[in-house]
Image (cartoon, rainbow, N blue to C red; front, side, top):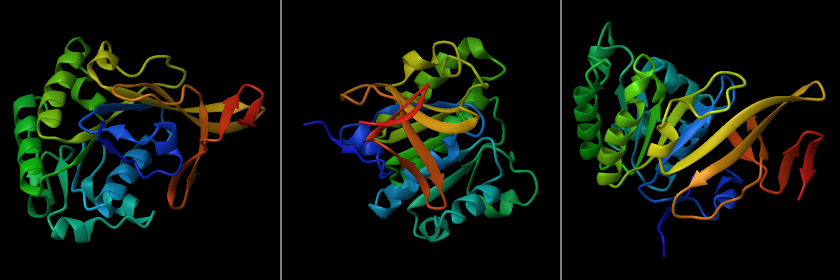
Amino acid sequence: MIKRVETGIPGMDEILHGGIPERNVVLLSGGPGTGKTIFSQQFLWNGLQKGEPGIYVALEEHPVQIRQNMAQFGWDIRPYEDQGMFAMVDAFTAGIGRSREYEKYIVHDLTDLREFIDVLRQAIKDIDAKRVVVDSVTTLYINKPAIARSIILQLKRVLAGTGCTSIFVSQISVGERGFGGPGVEHGVDGIIRLDLDEIDGELKRSLTVWKMRGTSHSMRRHPFDITDKGIIVYANKILKRGGIVEI
């Protein structure tokens, strides 16, 4: 029996036929405004509710802003930080300003992958993390696409080796067909793509599991909504050009 990690996102585990296989590294790919960050934060929050410690690696946003954004959905992570169940890795501020006083795990030089991995590994060890989110992994190789796959594989070795199930948020531009970087999709165990498309004059959100090593999964494109409590995926519906159809 394969051990699975439930995302806890309504409808998502149904699409994944039970959840993400343990230790998998999943690329969560999508354009701006598709809900990638909310999805990944909801994954961590639901893990905390199950007693599974989690780490959020902040590469795109200030850690203070991330905590505030999560709290808007009712996901107050500060008590879990105090309990040693949640850690924020600050790879955004480089320790400039007041972050030095408040953040325990800081990456000072983002061009130094070894430092990044060392800080991440220490955080995982300290809280015995089970879930990790890197948001966004694209930041690590946006200026050096030739080594994108190498960076992904190095991170994967560390995370899978420590028993973590991980989500790498990947940014793509509007209308882009790929998943965010040359060869990146081959270095991960799973790919979930979020889309925002105009259908009959209205923007519709949808989600597709392109691959997931170790499990079967839905091969359909499912609509989802972002509510004030997070994401809801409609496993019993699919999105077609003509609109949403029940299955």
